[in-house]
Amino acid sequence: MEVIHEQKWPQTLWIVRHGQSAGNVARDQAEAAGHELIDIATRDMDVPLSDLGERQADALGRWFGDLPADQRPEVLLCSPYLRALQTARRVVDVLGAARLPLQAPHFICDERLREKEFGILDRLTVHGIRQRYPELAAQRRHVGKFYFRPPGGESWCDVILRLRSVVEMITREHRRQRVLIVAHQVTVNCFRYLVEHLDEARILEADRGADVPNCGVTSYEFEPAPASNGRLAPRLLNFTLPLQAAGEAVTAEPDVPAAPKP
Image 1 (cartoon, rainbow, N blue to C red):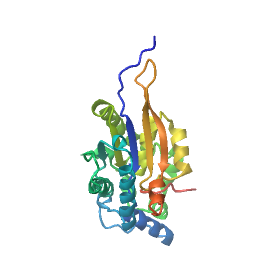
Image 2: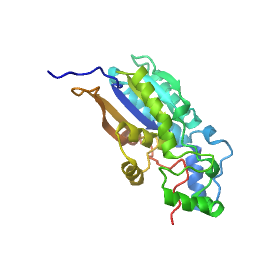
Image 3: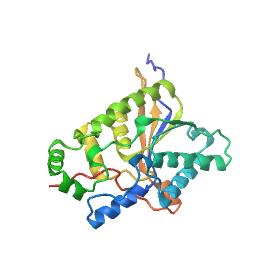
Image 4: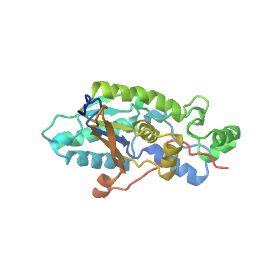
């Protein structure tokens, strides 16, 4: 007789990157102009959405609102960085404005969902890293982005370490629920590493293949399995149809300095 263990996972898990930010735009401009420094006056955590990013978040909210009532998010976990908070709040506002027959998702801000911290390399372009810290650029090429930790910053492994406790919390407090996470590009990839049981080579191959789109949706659905607690099975990967259907541009600018090339 097959035994099905108690479900420990959420029923649905969506992981979404924030909408385009003013920092994404400034980074592109600085790289194109060959500048060393990205022109951002605020702290990284205080960078807001761009006008396009606001429209992207609204489009995402309408997409969630179009789902059947029993398929919409029940819990919303969010990075404390302003661009992620604004994205999450706009999604919730759109759901509320539609007067949908469902309570707004339970909203939780969690600092463990913050962007990867890049320390001394903060606000530097690829050109700026090469010019100011050539030895760090060389070390990063040698070690690889998964393990490289800039002074005062984090490696991908550091991000994964803090996200492990988020996964444990989700399985403990939000089993059987529909959970939406709004965070950042590296955070999305590191969640994929954990949920899909990837290794360094496979997650970096995915990262090289494409940047995570702003307001792109990656999702998982619970699948029961005999003699286990089941698993979260992938459903959507960097899904951008909500933006395309609304006629909004799809953007995928990185948040952090790109890897300096030889």
